Image 1 (cartoon, one colour):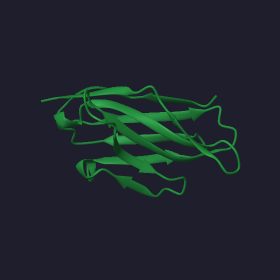
Image 2 (image 1 turned 90 degrees about the vertical axis):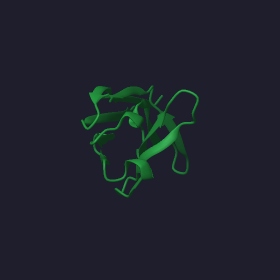
Image 3 (image 1 turned 90 degrees about the horizontal axis):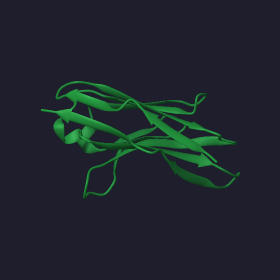
Length: 120
């Protein structure tokens, strides 16, 4: 069973930075896309940033210019560098790994989430 594990959350003051990491393990074939989503109580989970295996990225408008997503295919790891953090960035951040499980099937696996809290 594929495992997706995040790390790097925590408490930071507004204007500060954090770096999240996420690694996928027990992958037989390969990881296609990877991404970060976030969720606050009472709201739906929303896209923060996503990256393809070839390095094509897309970001939520609210984080453009402040967050940067990157990945290491060999390590099956994705990173999210978060700068100029704002209180409204406070949320549980979830990692997504789109894993190729057969030659034609990609399955989404989610991490358990990591809390990011930005104080004003």
